[in-house]
Figure 1 (tube, helix red, strand yellow):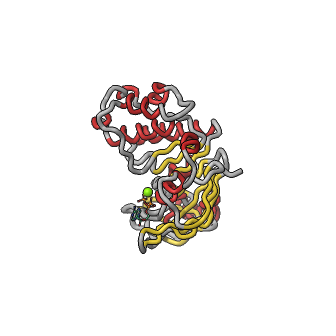
Figure 2 (figure 1 turned 90 degrees about the vertical axis):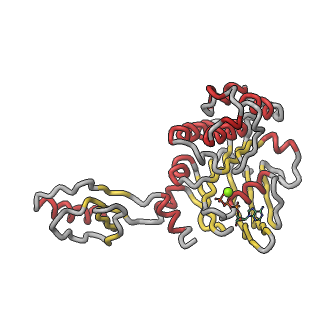
Figure 3 (figure 1 turned 60 degrees about the horizontal axis):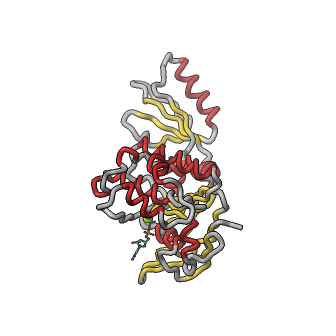
Length: 296
Ligand SMILES: Nc1ncnc2c1ncn2[C@@H]1O[C@H](COP(=O)(O)OP(=O)(O)OP(=O)(O)O)[C@@H](O)[C@H]1O
Ligand SMILES: [Mg+2]
């Protein structure tokens, strides 16, 4: 049985059709990423799955129950990081975690969870004195404290410094190893690439693609070759010339990289030229994402 089923989901706010017939399912133990531009409908979908918003149409199942009618039993099996979190500002980190711990039948130890999210030094500090990234870490702690089977993480690492993000990734990987199911949204394509088993790209309330990060990247066959444009010579165009992105960089894309590189390097070697910062790369998930969601 799937952990999450969404079929023909629709939701409008007045005349705004925020979600227009979205369908996907998430298998138990899977890390599933919802990607899409601002306003695409991700939070609306997640909050319907969490039971915080009503749907207009369609079928939704979370751990076998309908979140619109399910009671506390479902809530206890699910952990969540909301996009907007309002935690009691005058309590300390430890008090907030302790308070939330009380909602769950089999919670994890408070101090373990605080340490896991890197807030050990802040355990006695009031929430309102935390930095933005530290508050977000606390949100993650509150999602984990109940030892949930299923986690909803809506932009869990927004505002994290690079090392905190890597730490959060390790936490998600750890949860996955324990067999938990995770639905996350993110605007960081490297995060999606590194963490998810599959992603669903939504744009303007509709699904534009579902697949593994690798399968999405494979949709674009071309390889990019770039290097610093050498002075005073005209470089052979061994592929389609595209904007270099950076001053002085020359970039070309090709579907036959072996041949293109051979021609390019043979040309350079024959002239005794070193192609500075020569780089050969495949399209990233971000490249494909931008193409799929383009012209928003
Ligand atoms: N409570 C609400 N009332 C009216 N309109 C809303 C409400 N919540 C969301 N919307 C609208 O619905 C659309 C989808 O919003 P949603 O928050 O689901 O997007 P999102 O994909 O999560 O975006 P972001 O990446 O910015 O978080 C937006 O156009 C938004 O303005
Ligand atoms: Mg959102």
